Length: 244
Image 1 (cartoon, rainbow, N blue to C red):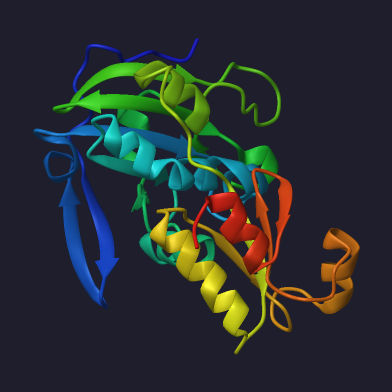
Image 2 (image 1 turned 120 degrees about the horizontal axis):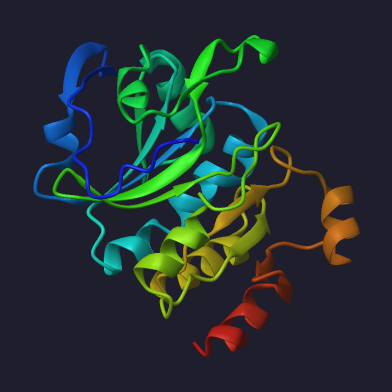
């Protein structure tokens, strides 16, 4: 059975990171001492579930976690710092600290270093999340010991439910735009004024007009979606937000 470390101190480890082309040692005291920190650990950078759901989930809810007393969110993986840095850029994960446990020391100290040689991964972390308060593990969510790569309890929603089940999650906003469009600029300005983060899908770079027409039924931009609902262009967005 995988160990649960609730009530115990996190392992004392120094992580070798690369910052601004310099080697920088980051200790567990740097990460956890005097802070409330969420940690989620996963099998590998750039892998499917980690990239599509696990990291994005925590990155998107970072503001809510901060409003509920969390100082930092740390993503840990048995990868080197160069891989973790590139993954952070690829994911635009500016709200999460990606920490490389390249030698697996921290993961081994948590008792969660597992053998994934059957996948050609070697030693990697089992998937889990935990809330750490002043270097002591307050709560752990460890994925069940099942074949494959289970992802049932270490997600951001489960952690938020534990911290504050009444917390309001931010709206999920996406909009189609194109370069030089003044109506797109207005829509983005309104969203920023309302404190709404958004994903921008730029025609000619991220999608084409056929995609726009297929998804929205429209040929003009912007086209704004909020929580999966098509709001429409900038005028419709102004009405939705109740702004002039």
